[in-house]
Length: 339
Image (tube, rainbow, N blue to C red):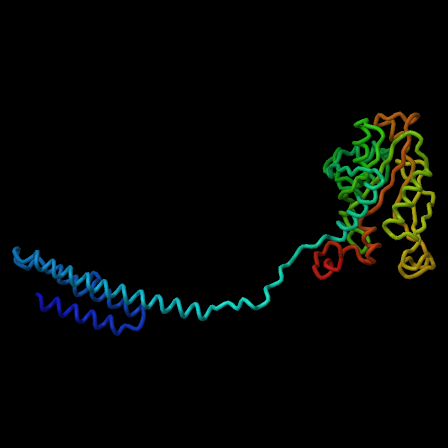
């Protein structure tokens, strides 16, 4: 038995010595120590050994097994170290190479334009107020002096959720909420997203943004409205900008007007940008209709006010000379990062 164990040990050590890798080393382990291995077979034959010799034979088998396992582990460690060193050499990182430039976010042209508008009006003493985008028909229309049979309430122009609830078509509804609070005087702008049932083209979208303004106080006149909007135009389009007011009609203001600014591209001489007219329309405005004040619980004999509304996209398109509104929403980073 001693000779057989010595033979198994010598054979195992010889095979371990010539093993070329972890796979061949594992084959040696299985052949010698596996369930059907040579040393395991010796252990299974212990039943044929005389009882008085079993302790001595068992000790010899365990000593051989321990020595083979020790040599196997040493060889395995050596192979793993070699593989790790080769892998480290192959995966060497050149720390002198330039790093990949991270993609940094950029403010959207609408956001840039809105922040500038807010800065201008906050500087004049206005506060920024937000309101709900899903609005009651009453606040979106009736409280703004737009009766039930008005064309603006046609389902072809407005998204109705039911007969009483709509997606707001203007942020003027936020002004009504503020008026109902009864905290006068009011100087506010209401920016936000609005919805109208329009086809998508270069100048229209079913969802866009407005900035509405409202001032309600005692002794407010149309001259205050003109002075405010003139200052706004000069700050956003340049100090040389001139303004022009044309009579118009809005249900919630009386008198009403549309305001044009002199073309900041050609200085009012006429060019492609202003279609040869020298003027560009940018907003609607007027004195708040007395009936609108009454419906919101404000005494029109004591308080008067003015209101105006400007499309945020229109300001962005004009300011950055963009000729297609769809470019603002196509999320093309090549276009947006210009701003």
